[in-house]
Amino acid sequence: MANYNFTPTLNGLNNIDADYINSSSINTDLVTSTTLTGNLTNSILTDCITLTVPTTISGIINKSYCDTNFMHKTGVVAESINGYKTFDNRVDFNGGTCIVAGTGDSTFNGSITYNAQNTFNNYAPISNTTPLLPAHLTTKIYTDTTFQTIANMTNYVDIATNNQIITGSKIFNNDQSFKTNLKIYDQTALSTKYMQASQLIDTFTLQSQNGQASQFNISLQNVGGSYNTILSMNSSQATIAGSLSVNSVLTSNTSATLKNSNTFGTLTSDEQNINSWLNLKFRTRIYDIFGSGNFTQMYMIGGNEFVIGPNASGDKISLYCKSATTQILCFSVAAVANTSNVPFISNDQATFNTVAPLCSIAPSNANHLCNKNYVDSMAGVSLAGLNTWSNTNTFSLDIIVKSSVYLKSITGGKQATFYLDTYGTLAIGSDNASGQIQLNTQDSLGNNIIE
Image 1: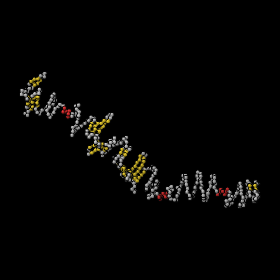
Image 2 (image 1 turned 135 degrees about the horizontal axis):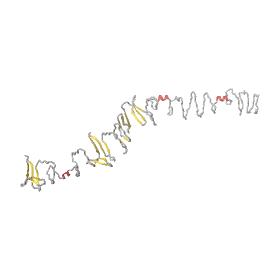
Image 3 (image 1 turned 180 degrees about the vertical axis):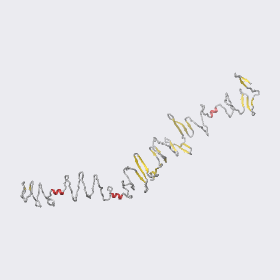
Image 4 (image 1 turned 120 degrees about the horizontal axis):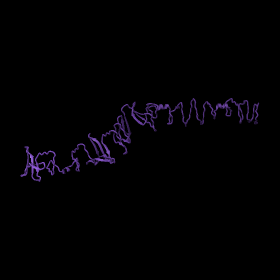
């Protein structure tokens, strides 16, 4: 067969038998042959009408058939697809909104992995399977039937349910924040008693809500595994059973009872202030500040005796008072003697029951007390013995003599006696045989006149 390579239009040809037709355009009114054999190269078939659906791989289709049965690969074209579509290989969706599913159901038989956030605006996702792995999401029916019962309540808390009873141990690995009161209820069944913890601004309050007298205890486990109650409180008092170490301010608005050993402060600069009465019902020990272990006890005994007693042999009690410049040792009490280093003033009677007071110095002022040695060394009158006056003595008051009065001679010779006898007669006698009784007076010039 010859090849036709020409430009003119072929009009009136019913049949063209050629191996090759090279033309920029072939216009035909109708191709009635059901089979077009040969090749059409670089040709545009216009107004090609396909009356049947092509059934072979090499069948020619027109634009209308393509637009109706196939999707556009490019461009923004709104298209609808009917029927089931099967993708045997990977399908990638790119763009701002990748997939928009309208009405109807979507079924995925394989695994789906989401690497970004998924949002469900109007409906929650539905699962008809029971979660088995820790990463599985749960369904409402699984949660309600498994964890909402008291017997199985081990891993779930319904935060929207009031008065929910939860059993089993719960472990919180992170901080838990409570924006309202925390209520801890009585473990007794049907009990409504509870303890409430709350925070208001800067004040934390732990408050009993029992409507009656209640007890608050703090217990710690010891080495043996048992629990010791170290703090017990009720509406009237707080009791600390163990040692109390106060590193800051301790304030008690009512009675405070401390048992066992208690330590207040750890440094010498830690001061303790007591602004009200401090009642001590037993011995109080005051230790040596230099750490020797010696101490002094203070206590009341017998209802009327206050005791201050050092415990070591040779200890003493010293009383100091501060002058304008320094501390002065005023009084010292020891087992061997008491020493006063300042003047001792007694405004009332001083009584010495067993021994007399001692004084080693001589009195120098008129109001000084005198010791026995000083009195004995002074010339005086002994009412119990004989006394001799070597000087002139003046008696400003009456002298009452209930016995005889003896007068010695000026030269030391014989003596004269005068006395009042039992009859009231004044008797005057001279022991000298030649003695006389002479009465003398003085005149206005001081001369003696013998009567």
